[in-house]
Length: 222
Length: 254
Image 1 (cartoon, rainbow over the protein chains, first blue to last red):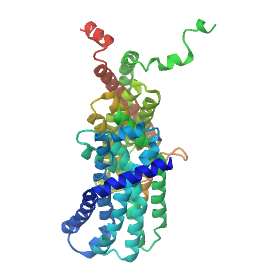
Image 2: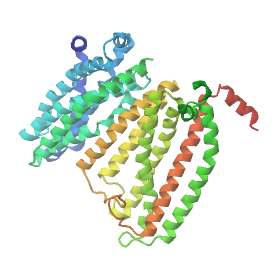
Image 3: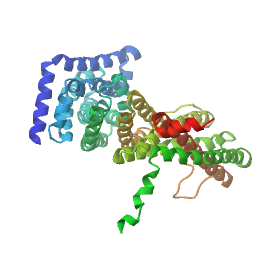
């Protein structure tokens, strides 16, 4: 079982690094969306400081949903996904491997990319650290919940818009606690409750989401 | 002597899972439930508008509560019922369960929308604003988005059986998330007035107000049941249009 997991993560990472452009596109998307906000609301650092965390989180949500399109669709198109599910390995293990690989090429780089953005929004050291920690703990939940949406909309016309519609409402708690951690530090409080809740959501989704993803894949592949 | 018993216990329960049986039974039930909805609605509105006293703080504007509160309750409750039907449909692979889930979705969305709309109308005189980003309003709005997502996913898949099952998975994922969303939004911001009715303590509102609220609640229940059953019958007819019993239905009807 662990063998299958490692093999899938390796394969997906290898594919991602052979198509490096895709990873960079998601990062560019994230950075550009964040850059648009100061251009829209004005350059006052006082305002930017208060909306910084929320902006980064919304951009991270959108970036991780946009990147979902590639999670299953290529493997679905060439039949690999079907072969994987027929391989006799537990479907949830295969799904965990794919989601883990997805997080390593989207969630993890987004977390790193948030460091310069925290500086650009003048968040300060404490809130900046809270933002990075929150992204590190919260983005796995985004990948897991997003994968349910990606599996449900596999092979549908207009899948990209539909998956946004399905997934965004479900990510509200991650957004609330993620931005809340930064606000707590900025207000002189401890970010621990928010960060712990984020970690809890990620762990809870890691426990439950794989079944939903596997069930959704089976329905989509019928 | 097992063969002497022609109907095993489980048989009757699943009998109405057959679309033809459901269609007949629902057709008989709907007129009564719809009439009950109309009568209870008229009675509840009469008590609410003419019998219940004017509120000391909010004047006449509070009377919108008699529509707002039942709509908000039904909006939340129908989502749970819908997810339960969806789960039954996935577990037992019964067509009727999934049809019930998709028949409930538009009614639930309507209730959530009604709760938001009447809430905005009530909020203007009570708080001085149509919309406030408070916990209950925001989570009702997200509930409306969840209903819309369910309907959008169902509509995007052409094969009805696959649509039923995919939307069913989404409904179950949603129902697990609803309490977390509610809690997180409450953590985020809270301004809404406390519940007017709770089971733990004595109600803080006058008896006629409570009566009007309960009658309206029953009226909303009846309306939702009638609307969902009628929609389910329409879906059954559409899906089974090639079946013999639907054809014979068309032949006998004038």
